[in-house]
Image 1: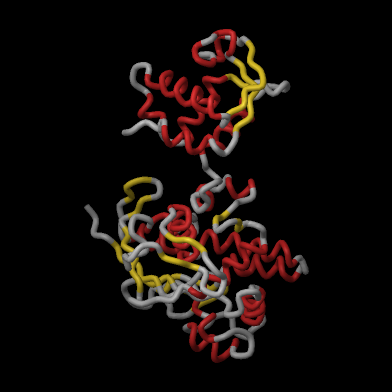
Image 2: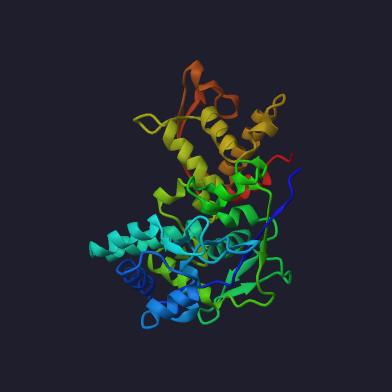
Length: 352
């Protein structure tokens, strides 16, 4: 087994005025116009270029993976990337793309691109959203927005890989490239032998209100949870941050729409098998009549409780598989799915 690799996570750093995300854009624009294309550490970069633009504590968040010393540190979101075999930094491709949008004077698209980048690359924001999804943390008042429900100081326990996001999943990820050179063993598609640690024992999470305000302004934050637009809900590394993007009711609705004919009728069995696949329970239902039993019990409860409204049903063909409750006269259904289905799904979810 390969030795576990340690990554240090420095305290969260964003723009200091929560309602002014463009502060970072102004800072990147200044660096892009600088006479030099390379920069030294974040403190000297601030002193030489950004003292009149952003605060000192807002600067580290612009930087990415720091390999100057071991263990490697994740400073921020990677708008500045370290030049290989050097202590100097340069603007990343993501920063250049963001600035091109900003130069086109499309503020809304620029801020949306910034929000998406943070959802992919900000480990701190991902830690927060994952804990909100799991119910470990909750949002309270904006002046002190985050309440940690756990007394544990190991805030990344069991979510290290998920919180690293694009640092692991991006093909251009410097962390991924760094690990490959060390032959770090991969246990699964999103499971690396990595231990995420903090550079300080006592940390304030107040600075996280800045990206939260940004998400709120996008309309992506409602009732303390991330609500993703459909195009983002298709990206697994981002969808994992929202409790609603991959909910059983959403997946069932998606499968129903995928299989529906032009009249709105869908074959029951293929739809339910798709739901089992998307919710990772298909393998548990492979033996005997387990699938049929699970399907009948879940749909029976959903129809009784009103979590699914059955509008019409009719016969189908052999390729449509088993009908509703084994009834060949009800192989095709037209139904509506409601959020209450999620609770029932958990009740009837098979145990490994």
